[in-house]
Image (cartoon, rainbow, N blue to C red; front, top):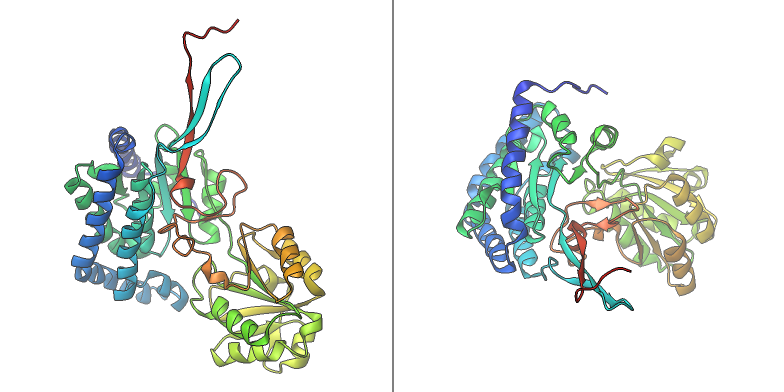
Length: 426
């Protein structure tokens, strides 16, 4: 991995200045009430709609550069903004504004025998760094979630989305200023120099959390180098298991949606698991639909016996996040086999079972150890907005603090408040 270990003087100065400004804004945002935060989000949504042309123009520059660099079509899809995606971005901000403010919410309280009253209350984490690639929509989602949860955010988008992210950030900052909050509650690292990433990973004196969103190489680098706590997810190797008790039409449509609705999202299905008892009934209707939609199928021996168009799958395919119209298909021995396969090859992101047997579904939901497990639903619902969170800062496969879509509540911690009456400890 080609990592610049000694940051340039420019990167050191840039990141230090970002930290200084972030710390200055953090106190004001932490103590802001719900009303100014909501005003900022609603105004940002209005500005995004009003200045759509400027965002699209900036995005066109990013797309042109991506095409010139030979970026794959799947990654270009992640980068692309259009009218519908900009409207979805603005709608997400409106939805976050409408959600309850988690800051100040009382989690629990109790009274000790000595009369001390103890409560736990939600507070912002502090200053969050988000390092991401390709998707400029992350700029708005992360900015909005951090504003509402009282966290200052410093965003470092990839060079491929730099123009788009800068256009969106400018609107967020204008909305903050119009609402009486510091513009520096949201900042964008103003350089594509990779040395700035390394400098952020060492910024223990002002960053409280790092959230990386991108490919395996980015996640690996952040995990290996960061001295700041990291909230991450690795590959989205998501599975759909089709049980012999599944409705065939449901299985066909659900697998097609889970794989092909958008192949570039982390919730896209990458592996189809088929119950051995369903090979002669369910397999070909499901695969025929995938072929019709232009999906390449890579299967094991049992699959290829029945589908002449399927290519041979290798061990590597069970561990691959394609982010492309390709799916690996494995035969398993019932729900036990599906659970074993996911435990062996999965990334603990999102898995779903298709079955009309409630007992089988219950076993799958109970025993599969992933951040999101589903029954008769597309893996593409692995999304903060679809969970009713307004948006997400990422899908966490961590086991501590937050798991699954990271929304407002997951961007808070808590403090313990103790009330006494001159109470002394004997």
